Image 1 (cartoon, rainbow, N blue to C red):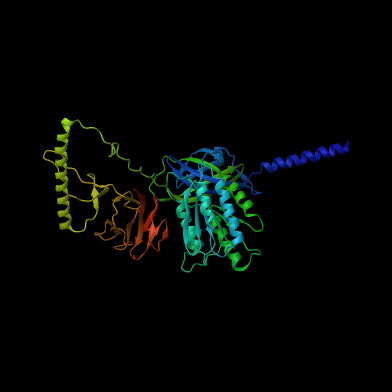
Image 2 (image 1 turned 30 degrees about the vertical axis):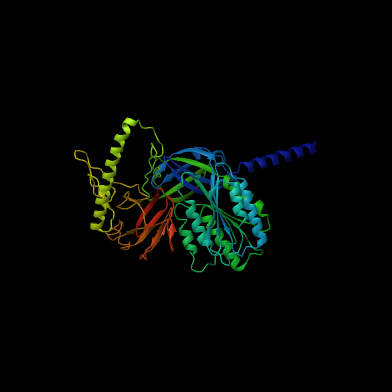
Length: 500
């Protein structure tokens, strides 16, 4: 009888302990990432108990949030794996000789295994870094293509540009492409070593995380025992991961495949908090998003600095009646159409002659502000002459812009520069520049230029005094611009939209 009582007591005690363990209160909260998709703001939070177990089930009443001084109502909370969303994974792989061939074979196998797990909503990109940073694969859901490119990776470089790789991965993670999943994650496989002479410093990497950060999950390829310079490098890699909102995981003696599988589970075991942001100003200014979780008498909070930017403009729609469709013309009307065609050809020839004469007389054509009747700037005019038939309203000869620059913040917020890039388009303080910004004294007279190379638009610094930045990072060579990039010159910031 006593024995049965003791066994029952022991069972009740152990059951109570397991229940208590399963229902442990949250002990930490990390705001993993935030993105604005008007009229909502989505925040991804990583909440864990004292044992490091992730918690994803919450009620809306447990969370509160603010953006700047504005309180944001909480609309919904869901475990991320139940939202139906995908993840855009950016893998950053050390391709220097500091990674031994046997270990690199395991890296290739782990990357291929990750590609096999991609859902229909996921996308995956791969960057390799050694003496330079190179794009192995852009974002894709094509598993076969990814695995072929991963198979060809080899660690051959003598030096390691980890810092530059991290900066480029973060820039890639901020792409505004509407065809990519909104949630972005960087996964870096490295021993933390960066020995490229003249490359970006640790502080430059950390500055890139100050606004609109992208979480970095670092897999440390440690050499055991860890000591000396190698220990410092691993510590720095961990610092990057934690400050970015991600996590550091050391491989040690564990199988790499097991480490990556566990990391994939952690990335997906977050909660998505949907906030009502329909009244949020989309002025491009930096604001603080703060999320607070309350559980009983406990309050946990974390925040990130972010820019609330307006949505991307829609791409120009193709003509509703495209050329190439041939329709039969009645014989009686064919001759009339021929006369009309000749008249139009003559008109176009006259326009071309006037334009040629105008350009010859005025020299280099440049853009100048166009002002609405109310005095506000509405865009840019190329000041071409107009031709019109008698009795008809004048019409202007226009071209579809290839690049649109939108000024963020400050007195010129919202100013739009629409450009057709043929060779070099100069941005600077001087009035003769194609894009003239006279009010910012920290901009050089000829500061930087947009260049067209094939189908791509590049940004080139023209030896300016204060340098040219893209997404907060100074450029040292021609930089290929992406949709949504932010050009920084002096105190001025310009958001880039590209039309092909």
